[in-house]
Every structure is written in structure tokens, then in C-alpha cells.
Length: 336
Image (cartoon, rainbow, N blue to C red; front, side, top):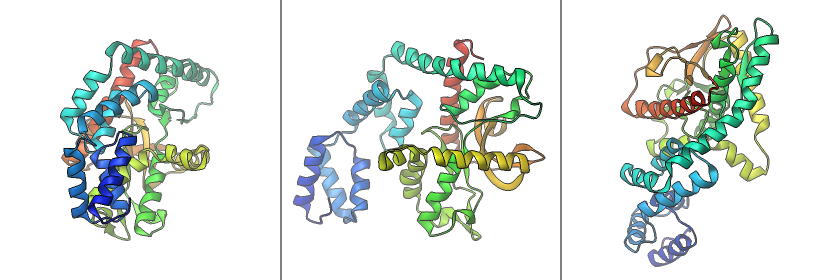
């Protein structure tokens, strides 16, 4: 769509919208990537809205229907994805209410988690009965946080803190994206954090991050951070599959090694790990949640004393809600 002529750009954008449902945020991102004049972008988008080629409520309903019916996403994951696209809370709420049947939704969630329970429950029992006394368990199968909770619940003789879920993969992806953006080495970055769930709801946080002594948040603009960096880190695995036609299993394996090395050998450099919460930062105790951590004497410790902005609190709260919903569904199945 690289054109700086209004009518030409409008016609091409209109044809694009006629082929697929899209939203203002997605189109604006495409225009910016094509280095189109910002004033022209605003004029074209406004006309597309006036002519109903793009309609926020219509898009939200189509998105919810598709993700709930075919991708089997949960409400919280859908809500967060739409918020990242700039869809209003009101239109998200309307779409969720109209497009998701509560009974079907609950049954789908129960079916998914029940299937995982058949795998991770027995694994937890086997570990409890046969594993070495100093075992450490890292769950990488999705939904990793809740699967770790299931395995933990079936291993009553193993300390709860010995069960972790994969967040290091998301942490490493964050470092790679920042390195590419700023022309640095990924090892140059300090104090990057991934909060929450190993899902699209996760919160990659650069609030405290530095590189070469400079604050990362001063080196990137907020729009790139919120609208490109955060969703791209969360969806990097799917992006790799789309490009390569293969999974990102090698990246996951490498990240698992990083996690286990730091867990056992220790590190004072921040690493992101999903561990049982001790109540820090308002995360309910026992929920397996991604935190900024360090490792000392073979145990993860949550970095304490961080001041949280409203933006951070909102993102963390969304992850709490998603994980609580999964935990409650698992509990209702008798898996905890």
C-alpha cells in the first residue's frame, strides 16, 4: 500500500478491507510500515470509517467469534488482544457478550483442561513416587502455568516451589526483539521482566530495563512498545511457525536449559520465571505466575520493592484473572 496519493491509497485500502475484516489499528500499522505520510494516513482512515469499510464494533464481533469458535481462545486472551489493537472497552464487552455462549465457553475450557489433566496429573504422581529428593520440574507444555499447577497438586511430597513453568522463552524473545530494535547484543540488556502467564496475555515489561547504562524506555517510543513489541513477543512462536513452517522447539529447548542452569547455579541478573506466588505484587499466593527473579542457593527469589504504574498494574491484573479462571476450571474438575 505504499502510495502518497489520497485517492489511490483509499481505493487500495478499500479493496483490502472488502476482502477481509480489519480494524483501524491494524491498517494504521501497515501504513506506517510503508512510510506513508501521517496526515494522509489519518485522512484515509477517517474516510474508510465514514464509508464503513472499517467498523470497530463489527470487527470486534468477527474477531471474538473467530477466536472463540475456532482458535478456542479464552475471554481474557481475546479481550487483551483486542485492547492491543486499540478497540474500545465498550465494543469489546458488547462483542464478548453477543458472540460467546456461556455454556459452550465453559464446556470448551473444561474439555481443554481436562485433557491436560490426564497428562500432567499422572506425571505429577509419578514424580512424587519415584523422583529424587532434589528434583526440579520445569513445565513447558501449554498452558504451561496451569499444567505446572496440576502436576504440583499431584506431588504432595515435593515442595511446591520445585514446580516452575516456562517464561524464559518469552524473556529471551524480549531480549532478541530489543537487541534488533536498538542494534545491541541481547546480553547487553539488564532488568527486563515478563509478568504473568505463558500466553498471549503475558506482560513483557521494560520499565526497569537498561542497556549500557541507559533506560530502554527512553530509547524506544511508547507506541512501538505497546503496539508492536508486547504482542510480537507474545506471538513470536506462531510467527516462527508461519515463516518457517516449523515449530520453535529449538528455542524452547535452549530457553529451558537457560532456566535450569540459572535455577541450579544461581544468578543475580534478572531472569523471568513462572513460580508459585508468595503474594508479592498482589498475585494470589500459590498461583504459578511469571515474575522478575534472581536465583540464590538453588532457589528463585522474586525481585522485591518495585513500584508499579497503573499501566503495569492493569497488565498484571489481566494475567491474574486469566490464571485464576484456568485454576478455578481445573479445581472444578477435581484436578487440584
